[in-house]
Length: 207
Image (cartoon, rainbow, N blue to C red; front, side, top):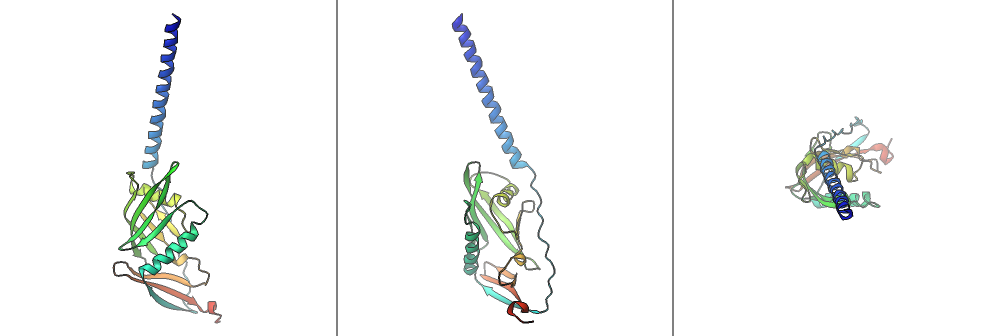
């Protein structure tokens, strides 16, 4: 009689453990589905303030993909100092963003191909062409949301998951020389890149 009671108690205990584990697995799956399909927030781009064009001179400077690539990654390396985040930019036929995104206690490789679109005001929109994180099959908008949330970026870079693009407000860059920079033209396939640089006379001590 006593053995039967012990067996029943043991069976009841295993049932509780089984149902507890089942409920935990269902909860984890529901949380993952909620994270994947939760609506992504819309992004707002910085408003460019009109700057007077008098008392200054403007020049157009041409460069190559390699020169710009070296400059971007030197800036990125400095931005990421003291963090555990890693990503870099490769300019080829398009803009290739390569890095890692944190997922739970690990990281997964990130790869995004973006098309640069020059705006009239001199800024750039990087329009997403293809994007993936490891072997995870997530919606593109959700991956873009993770990029904006987990990858350190300058204040003048805005990730817009809803439009699947990254807005690079080049004209809002804080440059120590007080020069004002804008993009004139970008053709990566032809290796033809041009930038506008406006130099206020006051910067050179000219009243």
